[in-house]
Length: 132
Figure 1 (tube, rainbow, N blue to C red):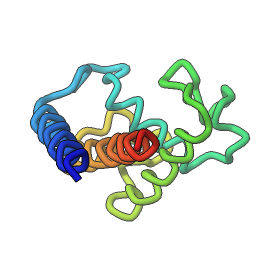
Figure 2: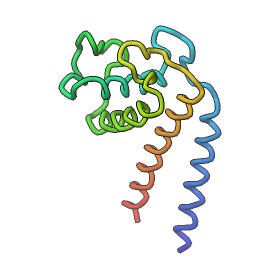
Figure 3: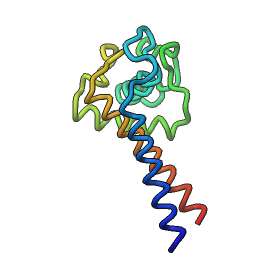
């Protein structure tokens, strides 16, 4: 039981630190043409939602690999697709093909950071459960 208490405190502390850091800006904010890692994650959602799976990893007129080409394994791409599906329900402009490049808003930033934290949280819980 003591192990679970320590684990709970550790997870809560890690989440608190991440939440605090997430309130700050991000690299590339407002700096075209690439806009930073935030834009990479947003763009991957755009690509995975709007293009067929067979085009996700290939250079096409709709998927310029020089502009944040999807370079993670398929499981990560499917995560981007699921996040994009939710994003589309909230605001379709966030993942509009070709026209959403560089999209920045406070609500979208909150959405992106929340989906990122949930992904990290799920990975950490899986790792902890595998250890015990």
